[in-house]
Length: 249
Ligand SMILES: [Ca+2]
Ligand SMILES: [Ca+2]
Ligand SMILES: [Ca+2]
Image (cartoon, rainbow, N blue to C red; front, side, top):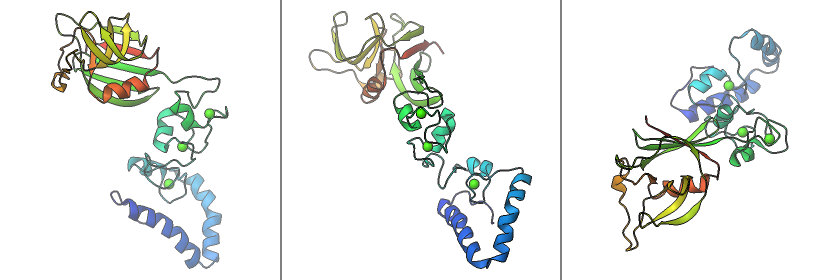
Protein backbone atom coordinates (compact mmCIF):
# COMPACT_ATOMS: atom_id res chain seq x y z
CA UNK A 1 0.00 0.00 0.00
CA UNK A 2 1.45 3.33 -1.05
CA UNK A 3 1.42 6.59 0.81
CA UNK A 4 -1.79 8.51 1.29
CA UNK A 5 -2.58 10.86 -1.59
CA UNK A 6 -3.84 13.95 0.16
CA UNK A 7 -5.13 16.00 -2.76
CA UNK A 8 -6.07 13.41 -5.30
CA UNK A 9 -9.39 11.78 -4.47
CA UNK A 10 -9.62 9.82 -7.74
CA UNK A 11 -6.13 8.41 -7.23
CA UNK A 12 -7.09 7.62 -3.70
CA UNK A 13 -10.15 5.61 -4.73
CA UNK A 14 -8.48 3.90 -7.67
CA UNK A 15 -5.56 2.99 -5.50
CA UNK A 16 -7.77 1.61 -2.75
CA UNK A 17 -10.07 -0.39 -5.07
CA UNK A 18 -7.36 -1.46 -7.51
CA UNK A 19 -5.20 -2.91 -4.83
CA UNK A 20 -7.93 -5.20 -3.67
CA UNK A 21 -8.92 -6.56 -7.09
CA UNK A 22 -5.36 -6.93 -8.38
CA UNK A 23 -4.46 -8.78 -5.21
CA UNK A 24 -7.17 -11.32 -5.93
CA UNK A 25 -5.66 -12.10 -9.34
CA UNK A 26 -1.99 -11.77 -8.51
CA UNK A 27 -1.88 -13.69 -5.30
CA UNK A 28 -2.95 -16.91 -7.08
CA UNK A 29 -4.72 -18.37 -4.13
CA UNK A 30 -2.13 -19.34 -1.56
CA UNK A 31 -0.62 -15.99 -0.72
CA UNK A 32 -4.03 -14.30 -0.68
CA UNK A 33 -5.44 -16.99 1.61
CA UNK A 34 -2.56 -16.42 3.99
CA UNK A 35 -3.23 -12.70 3.98
CA UNK A 36 -6.90 -13.34 4.74
CA UNK A 37 -6.05 -15.73 7.55
CA UNK A 38 -3.54 -13.32 8.98
CA UNK A 39 -5.84 -10.30 8.76
CA UNK A 40 -7.82 -10.75 12.00
CA UNK A 41 -4.62 -11.02 14.00
CA UNK A 42 -3.15 -8.00 12.26
CA UNK A 43 -6.31 -6.01 12.92
CA UNK A 44 -6.34 -6.82 16.59
CA UNK A 45 -2.67 -6.09 16.98
CA UNK A 46 -2.70 -2.86 14.99
CA UNK A 47 -3.27 0.34 16.96
CA UNK A 48 -5.31 1.89 14.12
CA UNK A 49 -8.60 0.52 12.80
CA UNK A 50 -9.77 0.47 9.19
CA UNK A 51 -13.54 0.27 9.42
CA UNK A 52 -14.25 0.15 5.68
CA UNK A 53 -11.29 -2.12 4.90
CA UNK A 54 -9.88 0.10 2.17
CA UNK A 55 -6.33 -0.01 3.50
CA UNK A 56 -6.41 3.41 5.09
CA UNK A 57 -6.90 3.68 8.81
CA UNK A 58 -9.86 5.62 10.17
CA UNK A 59 -7.82 8.47 11.64
CA UNK A 60 -5.91 9.06 8.40
CA UNK A 61 -9.17 9.13 6.45
CA UNK A 62 -10.81 11.57 8.89
CA UNK A 63 -7.74 13.81 8.91
CA UNK A 64 -7.95 14.04 5.13
CA UNK A 65 -11.71 14.57 4.90
CA UNK A 66 -12.55 11.03 3.80
CA UNK A 67 -15.14 8.78 5.35
CA UNK A 68 -13.75 5.87 7.37
CA UNK A 69 -17.08 4.08 6.82
CA UNK A 70 -17.24 3.99 3.02
CA UNK A 71 -15.71 5.35 -0.18
CA UNK A 72 -15.61 9.11 -0.78
CA UNK A 73 -15.48 12.35 1.13
CA UNK A 74 -16.96 12.48 4.60
CA UNK A 75 -19.49 15.20 3.79
CA UNK A 76 -20.59 13.61 0.51
CA UNK A 77 -20.88 10.01 1.63
CA UNK A 78 -23.94 8.44 3.22
CA UNK A 79 -22.70 4.91 3.84
CA UNK A 80 -25.91 3.56 5.40
CA UNK A 81 -28.18 5.43 2.95
CA UNK A 82 -30.38 6.99 5.62
CA UNK A 83 -30.28 10.54 4.26
CA UNK A 84 -27.67 11.76 6.74
CA UNK A 85 -24.09 12.16 5.50
CA UNK A 86 -21.30 10.41 7.37
CA UNK A 87 -20.09 13.87 8.46
CA UNK A 88 -23.49 14.69 9.95
CA UNK A 89 -23.72 11.27 11.60
CA UNK A 90 -20.56 12.18 13.51
CA UNK A 91 -21.96 15.63 14.43
CA UNK A 92 -25.30 14.24 15.65
CA UNK A 93 -23.72 11.20 17.32
CA UNK A 94 -25.77 8.71 15.31
CA UNK A 95 -24.44 5.44 13.87
CA UNK A 96 -23.06 5.92 10.32
CA UNK A 97 -23.56 2.22 9.64
CA UNK A 98 -27.13 1.90 10.94
CA UNK A 99 -29.96 3.75 9.16
CA UNK A 100 -32.19 3.92 12.24
CA UNK A 101 -29.84 4.52 15.16
CA UNK A 102 -32.49 4.68 17.89
CA UNK A 103 -34.60 1.89 16.38
CA UNK A 104 -37.85 3.87 16.47
CA UNK A 105 -38.74 3.08 12.85
CA UNK A 106 -37.68 6.47 11.46
CA UNK A 107 -34.38 6.76 9.54
CA UNK A 108 -31.76 9.15 10.96
CA UNK A 109 -31.98 11.59 8.01
CA UNK A 110 -35.74 11.92 8.29
CA UNK A 111 -35.48 12.52 12.02
CA UNK A 112 -32.95 15.34 11.67
CA UNK A 113 -34.95 16.89 8.82
CA UNK A 114 -37.92 17.10 11.17
CA UNK A 115 -35.84 18.18 14.19
CA UNK A 116 -36.03 14.87 16.01
CA UNK A 117 -32.97 13.45 17.75
CA UNK A 118 -31.80 10.40 15.74
CA UNK A 119 -30.10 8.92 18.81
CA UNK A 120 -33.08 9.05 21.17
CA UNK A 121 -36.46 7.46 20.65
CA UNK A 122 -39.71 8.58 22.23
CA UNK A 123 -40.05 11.68 20.07
CA UNK A 124 -37.05 13.49 21.60
CA UNK A 125 -36.46 16.73 19.72
CA UNK A 126 -33.33 18.50 18.55
CA UNK A 127 -33.24 22.05 19.83
CA UNK A 128 -33.48 24.82 17.25
CA UNK A 129 -31.63 27.89 18.31
CA UNK A 130 -31.04 31.42 17.00
CA UNK A 131 -28.25 33.52 18.52
CA UNK A 132 -27.76 37.19 17.72
CA UNK A 133 -24.62 39.10 18.63
CA UNK A 134 -25.19 42.85 18.97
CA UNK A 135 -21.44 43.52 18.85
CA UNK A 136 -20.81 41.68 15.61
CA UNK A 137 -24.30 42.28 14.11
CA UNK A 138 -24.58 38.65 13.14
CA UNK A 139 -27.16 35.93 13.56
CA UNK A 140 -26.25 32.26 13.86
CA UNK A 141 -28.71 29.42 13.79
CA UNK A 142 -28.28 25.80 14.73
CA UNK A 143 -30.10 22.56 15.26
CA UNK A 144 -28.88 20.42 18.15
CA UNK A 145 -25.09 20.28 17.86
CA UNK A 146 -25.02 21.45 14.22
CA UNK A 147 -24.39 25.03 13.18
CA UNK A 148 -26.44 25.73 10.07
CA UNK A 149 -25.52 29.25 9.04
CA UNK A 150 -24.66 32.82 9.81
CA UNK A 151 -26.29 36.01 8.51
CA UNK A 152 -25.60 39.72 8.81
CA UNK A 153 -28.28 41.62 10.69
CA UNK A 154 -29.14 45.15 11.73
CA UNK A 155 -30.33 45.51 15.32
CA UNK A 156 -31.58 48.51 17.32
CA UNK A 157 -29.63 51.74 17.22
CA UNK A 158 -28.26 53.30 20.46
CA UNK A 159 -31.50 55.17 21.28
CA UNK A 160 -33.69 52.12 20.63
CA UNK A 161 -31.55 49.11 21.57
CA UNK A 162 -32.55 45.49 21.03
CA UNK A 163 -33.11 43.91 24.48
CA UNK A 164 -30.53 41.36 25.59
CA UNK A 165 -31.78 38.00 26.89
CA UNK A 166 -33.18 34.61 25.98
CA UNK A 167 -36.56 34.66 24.27
CA UNK A 168 -38.54 32.51 21.85
CA UNK A 169 -40.38 32.96 18.57
CA UNK A 170 -43.99 33.75 19.50
CA UNK A 171 -45.66 34.05 16.13
CA UNK A 172 -45.01 33.98 12.38
CA UNK A 173 -46.55 36.30 9.83
CA UNK A 174 -45.41 36.47 6.20
CA UNK A 175 -45.92 40.25 6.14
CA UNK A 176 -46.82 42.38 9.14
CA UNK A 177 -47.65 46.07 9.44
CA UNK A 178 -46.08 48.12 12.22
CA UNK A 179 -48.61 50.77 13.26
CA UNK A 180 -45.92 52.31 15.46
CA UNK A 181 -43.20 52.66 12.80
CA UNK A 182 -45.62 52.87 9.84
CA UNK A 183 -43.85 50.26 7.80
CA UNK A 184 -44.23 46.69 6.55
CA UNK A 185 -42.11 43.92 8.01
CA UNK A 186 -41.81 40.90 5.69
CA UNK A 187 -41.23 37.52 7.35
CA UNK A 188 -42.19 38.80 10.78
CA UNK A 189 -41.36 36.67 13.82
CA UNK A 190 -41.90 38.48 17.14
CA UNK A 191 -39.90 37.30 20.14
CA UNK A 192 -40.96 39.86 22.81
CA UNK A 193 -44.66 40.63 22.83
CA UNK A 194 -45.51 42.06 19.43
CA UNK A 195 -42.91 44.83 19.73
CA UNK A 196 -39.59 43.14 19.05
CA UNK A 197 -39.04 40.60 16.36
CA UNK A 198 -37.02 39.32 13.46
CA UNK A 199 -37.97 40.45 9.98
CA UNK A 200 -36.69 41.25 6.50
CA UNK A 201 -35.51 44.78 5.69
CA UNK A 202 -38.66 46.89 6.09
CA UNK A 203 -40.78 48.43 3.35
CA UNK A 204 -42.66 51.73 3.45
CA UNK A 205 -46.16 52.26 2.06
CA UNK A 206 -44.75 54.21 -0.91
CA UNK A 207 -42.85 51.08 -1.98
CA UNK A 208 -39.41 52.14 -0.73
CA UNK A 209 -37.40 49.33 0.82
CA UNK A 210 -34.62 49.66 3.37
CA UNK A 211 -31.27 49.10 1.65
CA UNK A 212 -28.99 46.14 2.26
CA UNK A 213 -26.15 48.52 3.22
CA UNK A 214 -27.56 48.88 6.74
CA UNK A 215 -26.97 45.21 7.44
CA UNK A 216 -24.01 44.95 9.80
CA UNK A 217 -24.89 48.30 11.42
CA UNK A 218 -27.38 48.96 14.24
CA UNK A 219 -30.14 50.96 12.50
CA UNK A 220 -33.52 49.62 13.64
CA UNK A 221 -36.06 50.65 16.23
CA UNK A 222 -35.15 47.53 18.25
CA UNK A 223 -36.06 44.71 15.89
CA UNK A 224 -33.56 42.41 14.23
CA UNK A 225 -33.51 43.04 10.50
CA UNK A 226 -32.36 40.42 8.02
CA UNK A 227 -31.48 40.71 4.34
CA UNK A 228 -33.51 39.52 1.37
CA UNK A 229 -33.02 35.77 1.19
CA UNK A 230 -31.81 35.06 4.74
CA UNK A 231 -35.08 36.43 6.20
CA UNK A 232 -37.13 33.94 4.18
CA UNK A 233 -34.73 31.06 4.91
CA UNK A 234 -34.90 31.68 8.64
CA UNK A 235 -38.68 32.21 8.57
CA UNK A 236 -39.27 28.88 6.88
CA UNK A 237 -36.85 27.07 9.19
CA UNK A 238 -38.03 28.56 12.50
CA UNK A 239 -40.91 27.27 14.56
CA UNK A 240 -43.02 28.97 17.18
CA UNK A 241 -41.02 28.28 20.32
CA UNK A 242 -37.59 28.35 18.64
CA UNK A 243 -35.15 29.93 21.07
CA UNK A 244 -33.82 33.41 20.29
CA UNK A 245 -30.87 34.57 22.33
CA UNK A 246 -29.69 38.18 22.06
CA UNK A 247 -26.15 38.64 23.33
CA UNK A 248 -24.06 41.76 23.71
CA UNK A 249 -20.84 40.17 22.57
CA1 LIG B 1 -10.45 2.92 5.82
CA1 LIG C 1 -25.98 8.05 6.90
CA1 LIG D 1 -34.77 6.61 14.25
